Every structure is written in C-alpha cells, then in structure tokens.
Length: 392
Image (tube, rainbow, N blue to C red):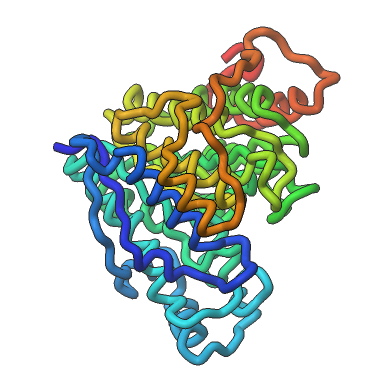
C-alpha cells in the first residue's frame, strides 16, 4: 500500500474565474511544479491519480438538485444567478463551471473512499477545500463544497466519527453548516474573527446543534495581526484536545494558507514554517487517533508565488512521509519557472526554521487579545466535550 495518494489533473486548472481574480489557477500550477522539482513525484510512498468530474448524483449528496442545474446553466449560457451566488464579484461565471467544480468534488470524494477502504493511508487534493459553498449557493470563490462531499462519503460508508480541521484564515462556514446537527462530525475552524474578515461567522459560542450535536462545532476566532507564535499557541491549545476527545476514525483537514502575512485578503501574519508545523500536528493526530486515515485538502491562499506553492508542496511531502528540510533551498528550476509565470522574484528557501511558541500550559494572560480569544473557545466548547477548559 502506498502511504499517500495525490489527485491531480491539469484539467483542475480549468477552475478559473478569470484574469485578476485572486483564485488564480497559477497557484496550483506552481505548486505542482514545485512538487515535481523537489523530487516528490519520484517518492515510492506517493502516487498520483487522475480525476474526472463527479456525477450529479455525487454532487447532490451535499447540494440541492436545483442548484446543481443552475451551476450547469450558468457555466453554459453565462447568465448570472446572483440569488445563488453565481455571477457575483466573488464568483464570476466561466464556461464549464459545473465540470470544473465537480472535478474538485470527485477528488475529495474518491480520496475519502480510498482512505476508508484502506487503499492508502493519506489522501491529498490541493485543488479542493472549497469550504464556503452552501447547499444551494456559491460563496467566497467556492461553487461546490468538496470538503463536505468527502465527509458525507465517509459517513455513507459507515464512519461514525469524522473530525474536520480547518486552518484557513476564513471561517469554514459551509462545512460547519452542512454538519451542524450531525453528531458524527466534529468541525474545528481556526480563523480570523468575523468582525474583520469574510464570512463574518465562526464565533466561539457557535458550538453545534442541539442534543448529541452540541459541542461538535469548535470555533477559534483570532484577532487580526495574530502572528506565527500566537497562531500556533491557539492551534495547540484547542485542536489536539478536542480532536482527541472526539476520537475520530478519520481526519479531514483544510490547509488554506491565506493566514500568511503576504496574503492580500486576510490580516493574519502566520509564516510558512508555522503552517507546516500545524500540518505536522494534524498528521500526527491522524496516526495517533485515526489509524493514519487522513484526507488533506487545499483551500484559500492568494500569495501565489511565495506562499501557496511552498505550504502545499510541504504538505504533500509531509503526507508522503518524505518531509523537506525547513529552510531548504528551492530548486532553481522552479524559481525560474515561477519568475517567468508571474514576473515576481520568488523566495529562495522553503521557510527559515521552526517557529517557537508559548504553550497554553505556561499560563493565560487576560490582557492578551489572543489569549482571550482562545480562552473563549475553551470556555464555550470544552465542557461540552468532557474537557476542563482550565487544565486540559
């Protein structure tokens, strides 16, 4: 059995909202070029498989049939349907919209199936992670919600506990909404607070539906300008304890890398190395609690040259159990390709080294906005999961 499977097809670059849109296909192209130039495609632990668009039946496991039909029309006639979020500034129309988005769905669903069936330990879909899409509407650059579809496939296959960990700068509102009342799914989102960033949701007091679902939504809403040490402090204080308490059979994670200080759409300042550390923690949790079953997705990230390819290539390496050294020089072949594609002088190294942070166990500072944010989440949700907000 291979350790990791990466779904990839150049056809995934067809998810393209047009010139000037932040969700540029170049971020995927540069990531895959870096994956290749780092030698990861030659790793015996990693396999790459093609992916075709998902059928309507698969897409409709999480989306209304009327909405799927509307997406197909919008991508054919190019007539806006703003009530469904199609043809807006965030989600401009493009030919083949349905097929391009359905291909993202297929990637995440097929990986979920492969991981559950034991064909592979870890699955990777860097073109996925479209976490804002709602059951009947596009939102925030996301047409279909492949993350929700992958989780739904796991549930349909018999999974009783799936943990979803979302590290994007934006709240994972779509996935949370899909499973708000489902006690089989724990959704954990670490994001910039809604007062300063789209979609404006994800408050600590939002802890899931009633009854058995209470406590299955976990939201860490961080203040703008949170840096790498603060972000890791927050992730460490919440994500491992709640995931361990939930004891999932599978972990699905979203690795949007728009929390970086160079990202044009968020106000966080989390470097590549901190995001790598968080991915390592999620990976370790999958082995500790879920027998290694892990599906890792892409997501947001709009610093196309110096952030997205570095974070996601490192994610592929991590999942393949072939991590790249921190601070390793980036291949000159990739740097020249990135320069030619973007006109931007790219980074020279894959990060600079580990980011030191202060553990929550070292004490809580009520004068620190970050600590207040973390404490609010722990206070709201920890007791619902049988955890002590002051000690666990």
